[in-house]
Length: 119
Image (tube, rainbow, N blue to C red):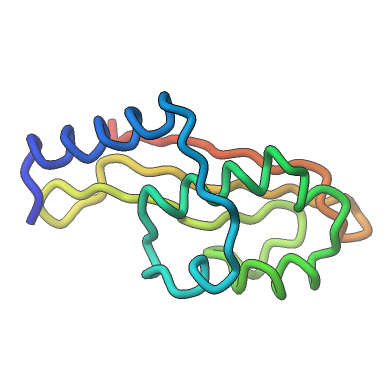
């Protein structure tokens, strides 16, 4: 299990890569091949999706074809994909999710990356 120093190291690497402007272009094969929790590469691919507006205006069905099944598949107004999680022992303590919002016609109207911390 990761120690606090490993978690801080991982977060530092992510911050460093992002601050350098490193950009991982979205790749459907890599996205689907990543483990369920993801990692820094998945965060960078999600940032590419947002920057290039590849998600805006597409339907729920098109999103499923592009990204696969989200973490909360049953919600029709807002859904999310887990991009990154860091653990302390067995409990998640930090993460980043790609949050996607739909209008009443199931068209994506917003996409953003949200960071969370265990309190």
